[in-house]
Length: 174
Length: 153
Image (cartoon, rainbow over all chains, first blue to last red; front, top):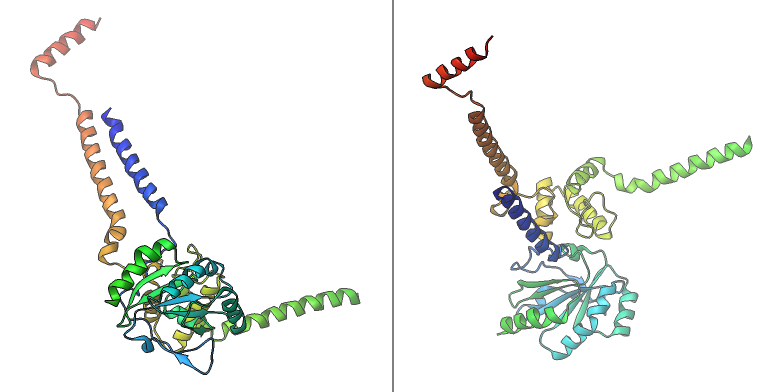
């Protein structure tokens, strides 16, 4: 009897570990950038290539940096949510147009609506690398001191928006 | 004959065009070699079971180019790795660093080995005790001898 007890116990522990492992999402890699200053950049605006934007301009504001592209299918998924969020006026959203063509990007915004206060162009994806972007869309929440406080990998879900992003914005805006 | 010649000539042409296409990649063979050495120990985040060196994902190409640029700028291999870790986290390293979080990961196999050796030694000792030739007391020996003599013809 005792002889079978130990293997059975080991088996049960193994099953429990594997069961937990199955529920984890390997795509969600914790970003090392959370709690660190948002990497600096200076990029041209999508609407006006003459003008540039740098995160420095938004010091003192709580804002979102949303990485998007016209070729990105899941961006369309989160887009209505972003538009709704923009209408609430809780925080400005800056778009980072990632590895896209200017005309395609502008057409996309005209078709689906533009939730961004401004969009900057990252045609080569260099800014994306600085921000550790590996799956578009991604969204960063940046506080008044320019520190990254939260990162959403993949499309923003209503759940993530209501349970994490909005409460965090309220807390940081205080 | 001419046809055959044309055929082989076009084959050669195909080969040379391929060689030309590959050229920009190997611009600087030393940097290329270092880049591949670094990239083969890094994980591609888009297709997580491929290395950065072997992946054809768009991001992997960009990151290889980034590594190339950093090496050209005179960064050391370690500095390049540190840069990528600072952007993408420890997860990009196929060879995890030794930190308090990974002590168990690195030490675990040795711990299991030690446990196995301990169990094995205990088992062997117990078995040795069972196999020891039984010792007879003086009384038992006399009884045994008596039995043996009885049986003898």
